[in-house]
Image (cartoon, rainbow, N blue to C red; front, side):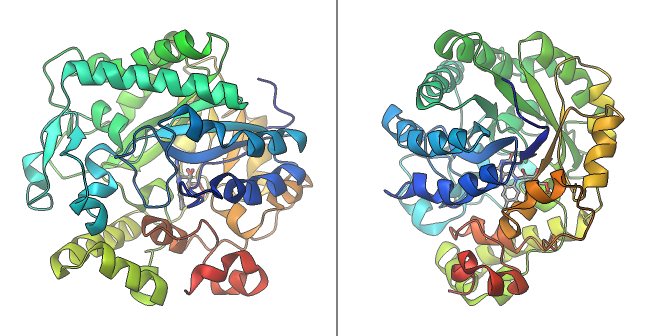
Amino acid sequence: MTVRNRLYRAPVLEGAGDGPDAGDQYAKHFVENAQRGVGMIIQGASCVTEEGRSGPGMSCVDTREKVMRFAPMVDAVHNAGARIVLQLGHGGLYAIEAWHEPYASNRKGPLTAPSPVPWQLKVAFRGIPVRAMSTEEVHELVGRYGRISAWAREAGYDAIQLGNSNAKLLDQFLSPFYNRRTDEFGGSLEGRARILRLIRASVAEHAGADFPCLVKVASEVGGIPGTKHTSFDDALKLAPMLEEWGFDALTPCEVSAFPDTTLCRGGVPDGIWTNPGMVNRLKKAAPTRRKRAVLKIGAWYGGKRAPFKPVWNRQLFAAISQRVSIPVFAVGGIRTADEVNQILESGEAQMVGIGRPFYAEPDLAEKILGGDHGARLCLNSNKCVSAQMLGMRGVCYNPAVTKIRPAGADATS
Ligand SMILES: Cc1cc2nc3c(=O)[nH]c(=O)nc-3n(C[C@H](O)[C@H](O)[C@H](O)COP(=O)(O)O)c2cc1C
């Protein structure tokens, strides 16, 4: 894949869902980003099964038809000169069926995970049925990734990315905290990562060996004290294995062992306390005080323990860059042309991604490529995170921005 420049839009969910306008919702954001010069867009994670979404607005790509509905949007992005990548995900233990009442009561079966719930999380998962996947089911899931990749290629996407970061299903396989399997998919780092190896092979088999397959590489910076997690060293060891297995590019990312805002860093997503639309949605999602308390504590803890810091993934992506010869994609708190140029010129990464600020500034690529060093409109408040958790649109919820950009109109509804 040749990209016209080294700036990409990092995956942030659009809340486009699965309605008839899903493709248009993505197009509304992406086409303008492309027209304003971004090199590549990684679409926020789409779910590989009907169950397993991490938020109500996450699109599903479990059938050919659902993937093909995005073809006109993909075409429009191409016509505007950018590349577009489909990110594939699954929430596993942290799927929406675990915590969102209407989804939980309509779930078709137990949540799927690599192993039973770790005992330390038993209280939080009280009353939520969870089943460890059988070896056959893991192989079935691997094939599913391959089939979806073939449909993605048919729809015109330039690549797929495995969205494993932030404690989702593939991270749960990688993490010794969540994965206590004794079959071929557990044990050593290589065993826990075997699912990635097989998915890479399945993508080549179904979509063609020349269809690029990208992957995120997580290092967990926090978990329950005294428990094992995916360490910085694990991420450094995993990166060359991923290259050997045929992955085409890596996005290193420091995350938490839990699905909190460590993934993006920044403020406590206070919308769930202050925004009337979010407060109402939270009450529907979590009707009991206990559930609401668990979600609020999670949101508060993530925001407090991982404050915003410019270019916070630098240590990890720079170290991984030295260990592989495939492109490394930087992401995380990158805001100015100076930071972008410095990362590229020093060879710490080969592509640079920006996520949340695209919500507030759809013309961001034009500004950065033009050498903009100014402050971004994005305040890293993470209001966009709680909004998406509750099924609202992927837009900026900073009141100063919603005033000037009507796209944020549902920010208060
Ligand atoms: C609202 C929101 C949704 C996100 N969704 C995804 C996602 O679907 N897949 C993913 O890999 N990362 C996701 N991320 C992480 C971003 O891609 C990015 O790594 C992170 O926000 C840090 O970059 P930034 O500081 O430029 O926003 C999300 C972040 C936010 C704030």
